[in-house]
Image (cartoon, rainbow, N blue to C red; front, side):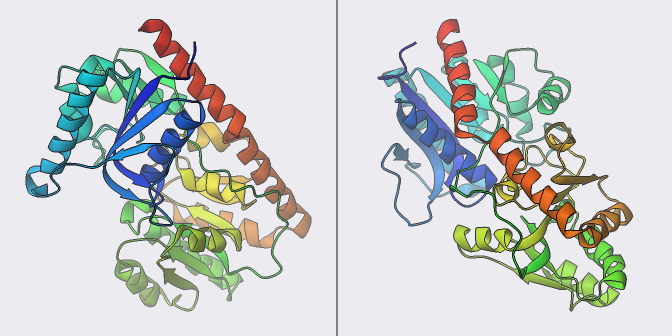
Length: 367
């Protein structure tokens, strides 16, 4: 298959550096362009670190960006993509997420050209999945999934019987080698993500109470968008306001700097699909505590970098946090080395290119 001179469209809700759901389409566009394809990205929102659109692919925004109550921006963007798919006949059309954008395209005459890349854990009742779109997946050319765990969810939850191809998520390689522990951490434990009850933040606050009994100076940083009040209020009630701080970093670089200077990442979520923040921690040699949800056990159950605990269980979370604080310097250093090795294994540039080439080749043969 000659990839050069081929054309790919990527349709997504957001593209840029805002977060996982925004970053994955950006990395997909960049990797497709790196492989030699001409790439066009149709997106509702584009936000980049320097405010400048990338030069290696085209950005198309909705022709109407009003009427959100009636979903007009998504309808318009899907219509724009459909018209260009019909006119230009691209070799590949990726739609990221099972969203209303996917629904509008799966309802259209170009449905059989769509490759839908599932972003969530594919569990019943997921608030990030458009229910109508999930029932139309049989119309798609194929569904892309990042893990075997999510494959199973796609089959069981959506009743999908068609082709599933493997396309794991990955993150930008910042060129960071293995880093020994900092002489002074900005936080013992850092949470990065939405301040949302389903992220297990109340369990994190309660676990901090137990940890602070043994380590009165323990520092927990909760960073990300959303209201801090429910968790700050709980911290005040439980007497750990001096141990827990809140932050909203304005830039991706500030976020990565804080992560790199933390002892351990904590992700106590009730639900996850394929959380990119764990890869970000691993890239900076930062061990992590995470719950056994979504693809997490499949990817990280055998690495020393990870301590996995059940969701909604503050006691086990506290035990894991204490384990990190109580272990020897040598044991902690071994965790950091394991974290960086895990990043090289799961998110290597060579592995990413091979996975994407495999998807492109499979679709080329079946065209």
